[in-house]
Amino acid sequence: MSVCLIIQHNITTEQRELQMRLCFKLQSSLSSSSLVADMAMSMRFLYPSPSSFHHHRFSPHTIAISNAAASSSSSSPQVAAVIPTPPPSRVGFLGLGIMGTPMALNLINSGVDVTVWNRTKSKCEPLINLGAKYKSSPEEVAASCDVTFAMLADPQSAADVAFGKQGAANGMGPGKGYVDVSTVDGETSKLINGHIKSTGALFLEAPVSGSKKPAEDGQLIFLTAGDKDLYETVSPFLDIMGKSKFYLGDVGNGAAMKLVVNMIMGSMMASFSEGLLLSEKVGLDPKVLVEVVSQGAINAPMYSTKGPSMIQSLYPTAFPLKHQQKDLRLALGLAESVSQPTPIAAAANELYKVAKSHGLSDQDFSAVIESLKSKFQKSENQ
Image (cartoon, rainbow, N blue to C red; front, top):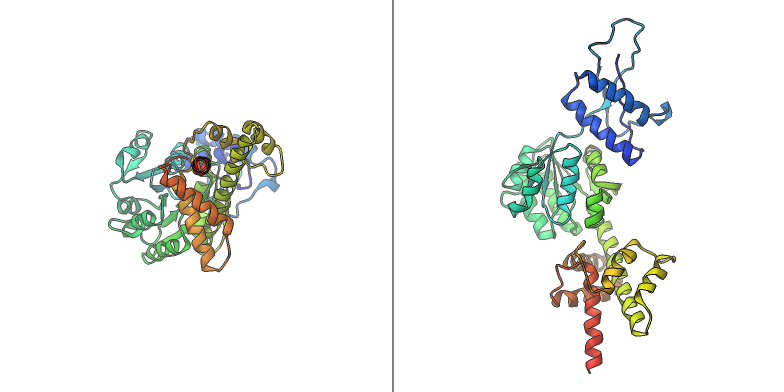
């Protein structure tokens, strides 16, 4: 008996995970008779009707997957086996900070062959213990992998890792791809693109919307731009690490979208902080304010998630305050480049700068509320 596996992309998370497991199992055991049974059962789960077949993302090719024990009689059921060109088999990941570590971990847990690098090698050890390979430089990672992801803290770090001394570009070449998921400005992204493309490799910028918990849960949103072919190739990996993805065209558009999103988020958190403190000042219970806001039209998940800890002056880091301020600074620069007034974001940026001056850079960005407390305290003492 022969079995058919057609990869579908508009499916549930559970179906997608099964699909990926079968893909990687195919690569390692095409001749296994147990695989045939696995696939036959999975087909009924993945594709309940012919109309559910969607295989537009990759160029498909045909592989006969036969059960050696099956009869060669013409009465035996026969189904052509069509699968897509498999995703790259070797994936690099550069930068294992608060976001990079859970993203790489999700790839490893999905069976992907991952090679990691980080400036501080000790951060690589937990992933190495789970099966990841290690290389001592971005160049070596890129040279040994088909596709390399990079998640760095700021534009300078992203540029250094991409094309600095022993940078990834030195290990790139035709047939390889570089995916920068860092949050940087458009100019930096275009600069990295130029260095990567000069080697004959492909480039995709793919900054993410989401913080530590979405990264751990594989619920990030990827804002991509650049080589469409590379976008198609790495989509299975983006699906492992995220819940959705957008292709936005030319390099720079992904960076711009991420900066606009984070500009809005930073301003929202600053306003929310004002509301919490004002409610307390006038004798209201800020816990009730959080509940009221969470049930209204202005609700946002971060209010109910972060509000309770903010009331207790606790700021467990999911998105460092220094990164939020960096993104506001870059967003203001973007606005200036097109003469777009952004007075609310500019005011919020000043609050984050004050919070940084109070030593809160590495706390969660919700610690911006402390900058308002200090202002109130100062005014009360005058």
